[in-house]
Length: 371
Image (spheres, rainbow, N blue to C red):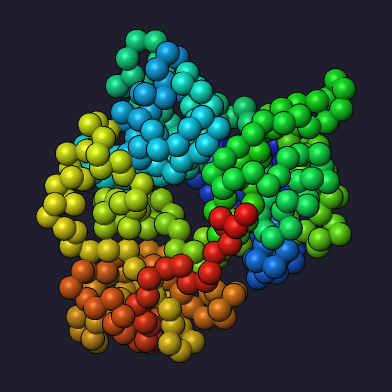
């Protein structure tokens, strides 16, 4: 199994740091480092951490009218932003189910970079190619570029120390040189992230990923920068209530029930799945993705049952973890809309019925948009 997994260009560096590796989306990626998930999580919330997220997909849509094509296929309204900005959007199927949630980086009218989830890249590319008009190309660049995420309150200082720009607006990106002389390469510095903290995602050619990783770790020493794995990424995003495709959202969920209506361009004339989601919006959803926070000491995990009383099942936990910030168990679940927004529910935690309060995420105050 291990031999069939794709590896990040930073794989050797993770091994040298003693990372615990795990399969994710067909890739062997660091789950945590010897310091542990809680310390990595805390580093991001209080200072700065760096993640290797090179498993994320990269697909370039190019050709005359590329931006118009993306706007006519993906859910969000690209016309709300301008070149040099990024946008969270969805690829939907004909039933309104979520094929993937992704970020679109609008370079110019003829170039839009899409960053889907690792396991869904090929399917997103296939669906777009199936409806692409002549002249529009969708090139899968999954294996050409690495992505490093520098997240936390001190992320600006770390980038500045390695000579990269920082301080631009949330969901904007710039391209800048990194390295010296013949070794200089371009890095796309994106003011995006999946942690709820101020931060950046850096897209760089695989050949320069190692040098950039080394430079970030060296520059971050004075700020107690921590290399972070997917374990901390999961606890951080769960505290924000950010959905994970394949757990909280998927082909069996639509944007309305997932709380992602804001990522749909409802006034657009066309996008994949438009008729289906318009009907859901008109009829109203039967369930919604809700947050749960432990009243006691229970820690929810995916698949655990949620009940209104001892014998009235409601749903299963889709995401669940221990929140290092709140020191409590938190989770997400698709709860029927008839249940009161602040109701107390039970979660079957290893045969024990633990009480949880329904809440609206995020569970902690975000600083992702801070100037």
